[in-house]
Image 1 (cartoon, helix red, strand yellow):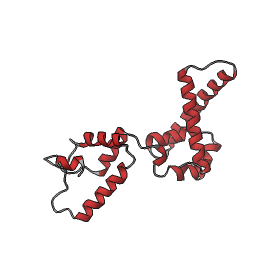
Image 2 (cartoon, one colour):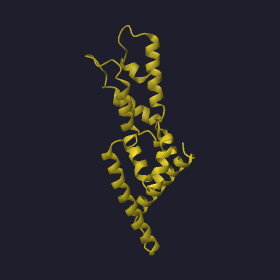
Image 3 (cartoon, rainbow, N blue to C red):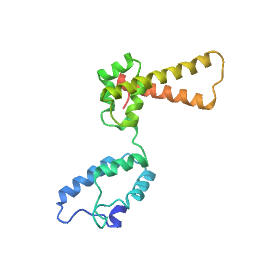
Image 4 (cartoon, rainbow, N blue to C red):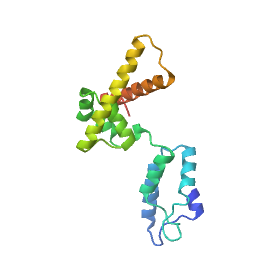
Length: 174
């Protein structure tokens, strides 16, 4: 029995067993990426999120997904659609237009691709900023300067995100 069932979480009376089983299986699939510590934190987080006047009905699946993202964000590599997006013409275009890291980071934050003209504009602006910062830091290194820990970490993160996104484009990721 789950910790939330032990607290008294239940489905409405008369809910067919196959519906209960399907909902619980879907919930388990959504939370399967969580570590043991993450699952424990989720149980603590959800214990007062019950629905209904007695607050003892299972919350909607979307509620669990949202809180799970806060408790322990889903690794970007496990996001639905990520590999197919970067493996498609969209990934090739991101490489050609040199905005791979900005798009990858957009996905990490929003869990989806940019969709509106405004969002694409934001990705393009952010891409220019990221490329400029990376270029400045690389130039400093080439000129013999030692980067501080913050700059060194920033550049390493940028390079790691670029490599991860590049692997998705080439089909080596996920």
